[in-house]
Length: 428
Ligand SMILES: Nc1nc2c(c(=O)[nH]1)N[C@H]1C(S)=C(S)[C@@H](COP(=O)(O)OP(=O)(O)OC[C@H]3O[C@@H](n4cnc5c(N)ncnc54)[C@H](O)[C@@H]3O)O[C@H]1N2
Ligand code: MOO
Image (cartoon, rainbow, N blue to C red; front, side):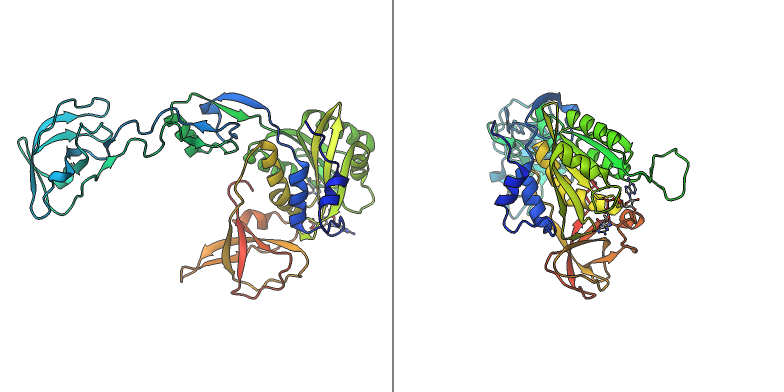
């Protein structure tokens, strides 16, 4: 395996790299070079594979459906016998059930009673749903003008043909994908190992739940937002709680995290404040860059690699502010973890919606505002910000169903202007 590039080497390849004012897009380009996929496979029963990432292309061993079959309960006949201007009379000569084919020969003017999913009898290509026809004894009258040859028949392999790639390596197993693999009769599936992601919060003012409140202290919300985002993405969480702003404790935590995890995430202690032992420890133990990103919220962030006992982990030192944690996770950590997972995730589509309010925005940084997208009386998509946009205010995050993304070069937005919105998709 080739030696991964150092941060300095990656930075050298990036045009306009400025750690004091890094455009958000540069951060993604940097991370794309820094992060290596876990690239270890495991074989899982399909029932346990939901949310996992396929390690190999799955080639369909069979065709689905395996035969032409009926899409309706009704009567199967030759479409060429349909009269266009008058009802078509047919004689019922047998019954085809799903799982019990009808084997006989069908002559001109004859039809077979057929159930949904039953194999089409030889030579027949059209099904008249039973609600459409008139029956009398073993005679059936198919009305004119309602059907065409080939109607209500599902073709062999119309979902997948044997030998076709059903799903490619790097796709995520959604419920639909699991269903598709089950339809191919595959009991087990090769997926990438789940990355292990260690997280701890730093800061002497951070209280764990259950601790008594004290002056100047706040409860650790970042532990819960990060745990949720990591797990919703499909990574395994190593929850390390709160670590005191104290060199020995931090060193031990970083070493323990780097030894076990593929990625280490921390929050707090990456800005310019005084009691920032976190930063010093990251520098001591790893190859780490400290950035000020041209964005809001989420300005300071540390990124790099941290190694222990020959094991290296990607490090994300997120800012302490609770909304900054979520926004930097969505913008940078999520795509990086997707890469670590081996997930070739399609880029999130941005929605265009009209802003209900004027928004102040300085060109030269990307801004994320919490908003609710809905439809107005004219049916247009509109978006409204959810109140206080302070980077510590989680309630406006909870109320939002997406983030308004105001691009690097954009200036003020007037009420009624179109803006981009990144909709939440269950991961934030
Ligand atoms: N002079 C400057 N001051 C600050 C700057 C700056 O550029 N120059 N950047 C500001 C921004 S933006 C942010 S974000 C913060 C980031 O600072 P740190 O990463 O060092 O984070 P802390 O100072 O430890 O915490 C910031 C804030 O968040 C609260 N916090 C921290 N951890 C948690 C947690 N686990 N759960 C809930 N809340 C948490 C903490 O109490 C602080 O209120 O720096 C600004 N200052
Ligand atoms: O990262 Mo800070 O929260 O922008 O405010």
